[in-house]
Amino acid sequence: MKKKKIHYIIMTSVLLLVSCGTQKEVLDISNEEQAVFDSKEDQPVEIKDDETEYEIIIIEPGFNAWLLSIARPEGYYSQNFLENRNAILVMNWNQRVMQPNLYNPNLYEMQINYDPNIDYGYEVNYKLYNYFIYFQRKYNQRLGPFLPRI
Image 1 (tube, rainbow, N blue to C red):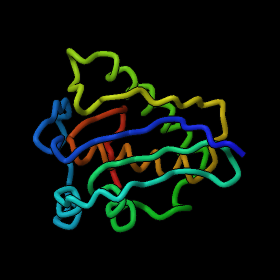
Image 2: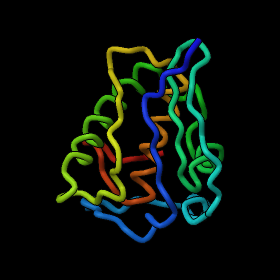
Image 3: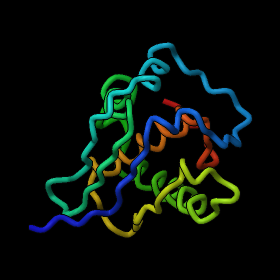
Image 4: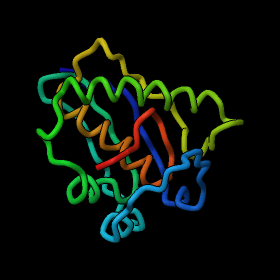
């Protein structure tokens, strides 16, 4: 079965220096979480579901460590919750990609091809959602009407 790529999100540690934060709220970032944000570990996270033909590869320093140590465990959220949040987050992400004069193009590099009518499976939705939480917390961004909480 041939795999279809829905998107590659590629960020570099240089992005630690830049941010175009629009968020007014101060997030409660623990020392443990900050240490993960500051790490240079860049092990890619491959997101795929064995039952589907979709995958995402995220290359973001610290994301894999954050996912394993800080994020809520798999099964914490329902797939329906993840799909609903991802639809909102992807829409806002893609709007920012299309407005490089308003939003930092080094943070919002590429659009995400996510169709809310496709069942990508639990793992794809879980890791994509957690990437958005990680991204918002690390770069002090706000992609939706809700705070990026853990």
